[in-house]
Length: 113
Image 1: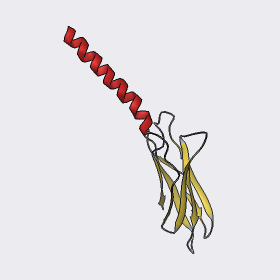
Image 2 (image 1 turned 90 degrees about the vertical axis):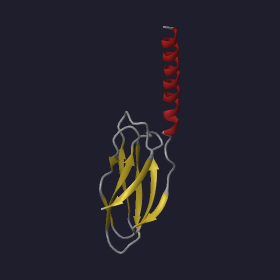
Image 3 (image 1 turned 90 degrees about the horizontal axis):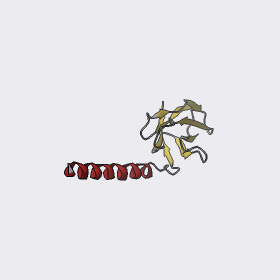
């Protein structure tokens, strides 16, 4: 009986340590800027809602480009932002919101459609 108590207390301590370590790993990703496929893009996470983020892209080509944000939401399903079309020289935004039970936005990217 004494061994069972020791095993249970060790398991409880390990679970408590894991529970406190996981949220720290889900810190919001800093804004990133990258040029890919003719788009000059900046990712962002909203200041007042860390589960809402997106990408602002400027079209640097001679024709329209359609794209959407790809948002990684931690323990919740990932989110695909709205599809938007940017004309040459124009900047457009695609955004999305992770579920309330998400551990936070881990990464934001974009896909040219």
